[in-house]
Length: 331
Length: 246
View 1: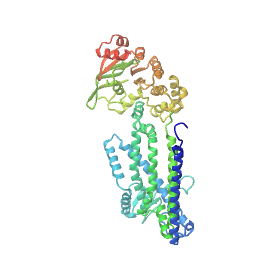
View 2: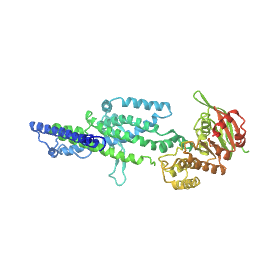
View 3: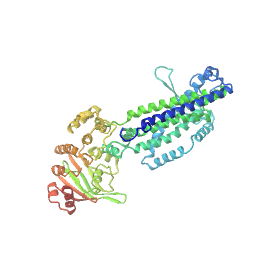
View 4: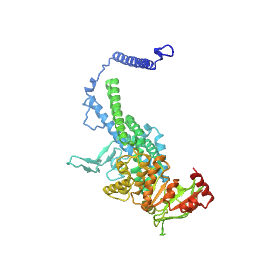
């Protein structure tokens, strides 16, 4: 080597390696200490570790279940019921928030002054108030509704009462094609249709309305990012404003919209445990009960963490795949 | 000459307080090629953008193919179908293939059957000499190719008038020729054309009428021979001296 003494410390590659080894050592030491500490404390309190408790009888009821469930079922089944409740409210929330958010985002850019202002007021009011507070409001509103016999009946087949929201449902049991079942009030209760509990309806309304405000801003930014020349070219070809939005602007806005939209979808999933505040039995609420009864906090929290991690990774994987599909082709 | 296909009469336009078009009066006959030139900010682009209502004029009359442009959606739609426009920055739809760019308006606006629209589109791509690029996306083409696709797209609805807004200004010098060739071919076929351009060679060869604008006014209208060799107006002389001098 020409210029002076060759020191191994002078090698950036060697230094990089040393730092990486140090970081790994620190992380492993910290993890080991945490595990050791937990095990010691569990032993002191006489709590057995492991997931064996999942097979035991849960012994508590769950107010809403998509699959059959009784208190005699296992903790594993109880947690599955909670997970399904989380998935249902998140999935429907994602669909509704996307629809509402897109409409609001477009409305905010409307040439109509009143429509634009109203959308702005919605966005500013909703996204600046904590979601938890909004959930209490919706729950308060839904439970303060009149009883079944005086139910609000704004649209045919739609009933709003303190028992929740009754909507038409599809009956698949009649054969290949589903039959639309319109609910009706008979005596003191509703017959037919699907009843959404006040808890579910409040959580869904809260998540949808709150997240739609953020999605509206994302959609607005996406539309503004499409060059004005695109609209002009479409206008000069005689396309109508609605066609321009649908065929030219929104498809291009998507590539700007999709990445931040993914975060909003993840937010809906991760905000769904606020359900616990209004008594909707989601995964976190159910696992809380399980932890209280068994003392298996580490395992219970681990289950919830793993589930949410898997859910989030699956969702962002799906959105990344979609984003690649809508990306523009260029040289 | 027959009745004008485009007629501007005492057209005035303001951007806020800025008076961008001042008493513009211009008649373009069917089949006439008009080249508009002038310094930047003189209102050339604004004038031709008024002809398909991308800009709204505030006073005066604009009549295109017998339809007066006013605050009437039907009239505006009718005019836009009769007028094709080519932009400086191409403005192809980047999320659609070349073929889809060309069939969008025929299918969605004119209600043409997709198969017929594709046949028309392919014929137009032959005409601008890039049929082999039909399946590609605009981002995969060179600037010159993109602008030729844009010309084909503007021709898809069989317009009576073509507007060109500085169609070669955003191109690399070596690609200017291929676009001008396509435009010359179009002119030879008898298309009515209004071109804002600084390509004076093209203007001299193709134009029937030269229009010179400055500060929102039409300063001079003349056939190219007289316009280039004996301009009447001082301002025109200075402008031509600057752009042809080197």
